[in-house]
Length: 127
Image (cartoon, rainbow, N blue to C red; front, side, top):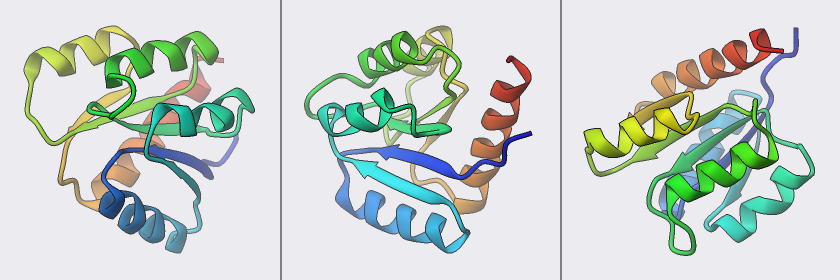
């Protein structure tokens, strides 16, 4: 069983990226960040992340489109989607397109870590 270590945060909010990545690193996770889809793509193509945290609203590509592209590259890669805008329709679309979970921002770090661990374990079980 692989331990969750590599987390890719994709969000256009610099404060969120900085704060969340710092707090996750303090918990011994290896974290990479991207503010745009184009910045996330190299890590995804390299197969680096074990879990992706993906914001629904990105400046270059819509979050749901990003999810589709991630699943095309790595169908079993767990993706936890985040949004600052409560939308039942968007969350249902995300889950239909393969998101592991859908969370509202702001999210407590303990809750996010728990969701990431669950998504990773669920994905491991599907191999």
